[in-house]
Length: 363
Image 1 (cartoon, rainbow, N blue to C red):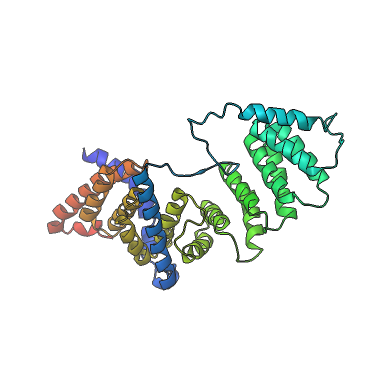
Image 2: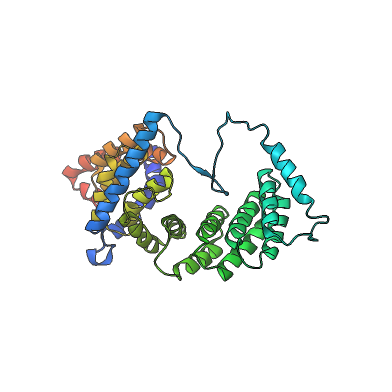
């Protein structure tokens, strides 16, 4: 039994022990905690999220997420809309009369081409939609519909799984468009690049966004912070997260999961960068949250900090509570194992004290 526990100890604590040297760094070398304004904003974010989830739970409503990649709300399952496709097909037929041959125009109206493209999107005929988006772009010489065409064409390419077109459109966006008026296009680009784990292009897009100044829409700033976090650039990501929480506790057009990520990412970054005091203060707030995901994660990270600090009995109790909590993720499997590991180390430490061996288990 002890052999298996030692095996689990090596497997599940190696990463945690690697952080011990970080936690011992002098305060001058670690991240600076939140200032008063940011702390107030953090509490506002948490309170706002709790109220939203509480009200939604009372009414029995589901979270109002927007569907990727078109950012449109999903339809209710009971709403069949039997004549919807019929009306769209009729509209497509009428609009096609304006174009006797594909690519040879009988009209100079970009709006006609854009309307046709949108109807093809509604029919999930994304190949044809892309043809009409290209036609609309060429006809739109005065750039009256450039924002709509660029964003919707990018979304159609994503829905079509057209990687070559996506990279082409993203490159064109970064090379030719400023952020203003194309924010949603940049957001879609980052989301698609994250899905496909394209590190180099993510860096290029983020660099372009950050080069245009500090004023960013909150939703775009979130995806910049998330992308920087994925690229292991925690310091840069934290700068954007500070701005987000300082903007107040409203939704900022973010989903509940995205708002939750902001709330636990900030203390996680402090923890990983060695500011254990700031991290622990925020984890203490999260553990008392009404949001189960935040509460359980706060308790889990506090248990990790207790383990690294040699407080094995407290760590074991914390891990046990996380293990017994509602199932939220695979990381709770590690909490279950760590509860046994911490308990066993505490036993060995206490039994070794009379013989001077307990010091080997003290950081």
